[in-house]
Image (cartoon, rainbow, N blue to C red; front, side, top):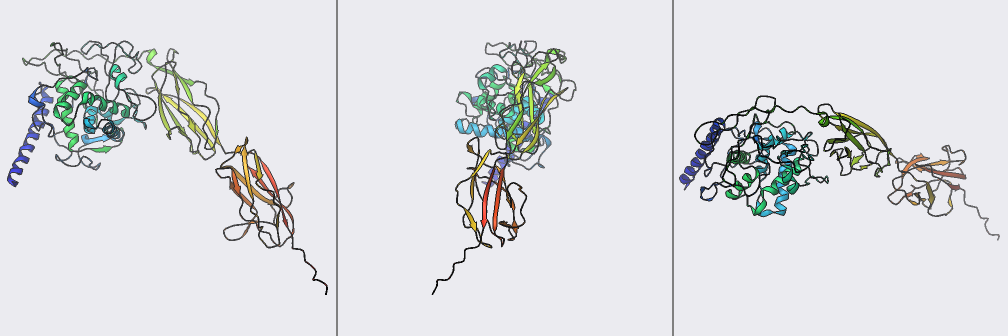
Length: 566
């Protein structure tokens, strides 16, 4: 039995190594891919009967170009080992940026809760994200998971690519003539309109946000009742994303690679693909062959693009079209200014909500409003103020009129000044800074809750406790600072050096205390003590906001009674 197991292990290892070498040779030669075989994709089986599995619906990406870099032959760990490896383990290629990895795993959990029969693995999302955008350009995303600038594919204008006329008015891709694939998972706008998700809870479905895009990709792959643990369904799902056998092979290769082991790396430090490429033409439903797309204009780092894949059959290579140089930004596409869009004074009391919301308007170099421009708002200061949702930084896309409005600000518990900065643009960023302040909670009235006379004998404690209530505009004033001072004369409220007093932890006299009202606006004073000096004294209490109450305290000896006459 043991010998049989060893033979199976050797056979599996050999098959995996041969498959990896074959895939590497394919990448080098750009020859048409051979059918997947059992064990060639990390243990996943070929579709039943060895048939070529075609797409079930239109491609999510519009079959736009994608990255075809294959995994390194040295995998991060042996097959079957844990996929949660420490950061120091494995090659750099096995590292996935933190926010990107979190988005994939969150999508897996979400889909598992709503469509458990799909059995979506996060490693499949990671494979597609690697192939489509190099994990969002190596994880270049902000704190919310949004790319600082949109990731756009080429215009799908029929010139070497599919012809897909504009479906979104340029809202997502900035192109009002033709559609482009958008974001880390490269959805075309028409597909995003159907499958877009709001996974990060900011109220927007943003294809440039990795959390939104990953969940949308997961739901798209699960469409039609697919079970992604079944090889045939997984193949159909991947082909529905991009109709290319080479694309399927590349995604499968990364899928198997990530199943063997991954680790988290900081955002922005992921390994970028070395060169973009394009899919091998696949037969269309009508039996004809779609044209071979031209390579992307340039690869990351500015080096020349690699040639397109070889023409299937015959061994000849189709002419490689010259790459189209990237268009120069027009004045209409260039950010010209960022201006205040009517934001008023930013002031709120501690713990409250600001009535005003920070709003800016973006204009292009011609002075016209710019839509769909990412604007990042950042709170800076020590008051504890945050945007609604508990974030210090948020990114908002400008509307058709060029305005971008930040979420409501929630004041912290500490009073003081802070700033809100709005930033837009990458080549020549524009910024606007707004001054804001948090004021302490206030009360406009404070009164005793009873009217008992407060009397004590020399050296004794006042028997009755003192309780007060602070209000602001008739409502209980919670968390209001109150200063209590014992004085000889309320008209000259200087701290007295004799008479009634509070005590500190060591029992020493205190005649001034800083106190705070509770959640109901109530304030219960500590015990008061009399010294040996009889007389009438005042306790003055003043709130933040200027409300004052004066309480009279009397220290007097008990009257001596004459003994009865005999």
